[in-house]
Length: 264
Image (cartoon, rainbow, N blue to C red; front, side):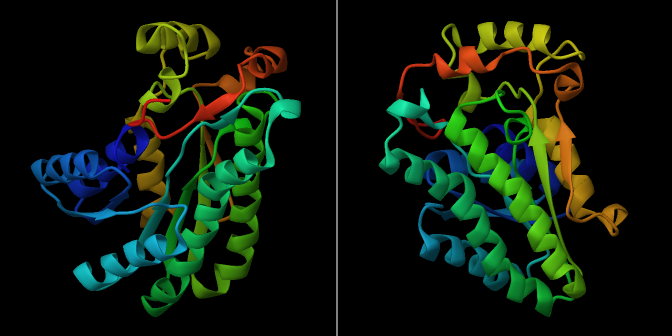
């Protein structure tokens, strides 16, 4: 949770009185987010975490319990573009690398949250999916398939864990103008902003704060009877219909797009 959606959500939760463990691969960005949380009146600590590592995910969750006494909320938000380009040029290795971060990590975040939330009498697990998991051509192919998996995993886990009063939901952002998106678009942030303004009925790009607001709702008692949902937060993109098109997505050159703080 170093930048974009994760950082905005951590700051928002801290300001609402939550104690936060920021789990990220980038110590510099993670510590900066901790300072932002504290400046917003909350408590936060940083835990270096590689979400492709099962041990790291388990350790991050256990850090929350050891540091603050219990686990009430888990936000599975780590993301990257993963492998880009046509399906026929996608290697099995890069398919697996993409799924390890976008889907397997969500499974592990849910898995290791369960016993702690059960001990606490319930909890809220929130994961970041995408409108690319709903529409067939709103994002890179492998990314889109993995995000569709997050949505279905959310539904299945919600059914299994409802008896424990553990709610499981996911958020499907639309075009959020964060480094993860605009670093992959020629022209960067200004050009990305123009594209998103034209693509979404609400004529502005989405922000991390837009997603943070939905995450806060799903974590709150106001959402006590909400589970198994994929909450679309997209400025009307899905309602309008995909304006990017499958052809434009498939024409992206084949390459790997890593975390936002890394240069491809």
